[in-house]
Amino acid sequence: MPLSEIRIALKRLAHGEGLPLPSYATEHAAGLDVVAAETLTLAPGSRHAVAIGFAIAIPHGYEVQVRPRSGLALKHGITCLNTPGTIDSDYRGEVKVILANLGAEPFEILRGERIAQLVPAPVQRAAFAEVASLDDTTRGAGGFGSTGR
Image (cartoon, rainbow, N blue to C red; front, side, top):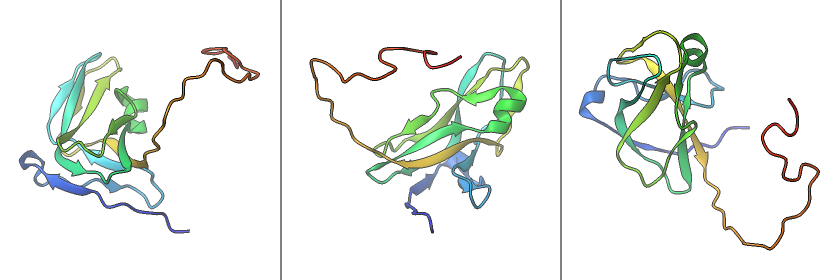
């Protein structure tokens, strides 16, 4: 069965010239790889909003989630903060990726290097209804770790 596809308008910014557009690395990839539009060194424990050189117009009813690349996380301790980050459909500024270095060594990010993934997703709106009590469940009010180790 073919997957559905949405069209997302992309405006390349001056410092994004010459960089590849977001793209899927494989036929079945869920996330589009994006690259850095700047070169910098992330010291251990530091974070930086890395420019990726474009702005987008996401259709109403969708968001784009920003997620880390697993290889950078495993090999170097580089991850995205606020994960998954959400880009709302009414945002028109430059997309940036908040990277953090959780590793023990400085990490150099090179312009043109893949640093994160973008995953388009439909948005489900919610309406909260205040009630006097909630239905009972087996878990009840058991919090973090209450269902296992």
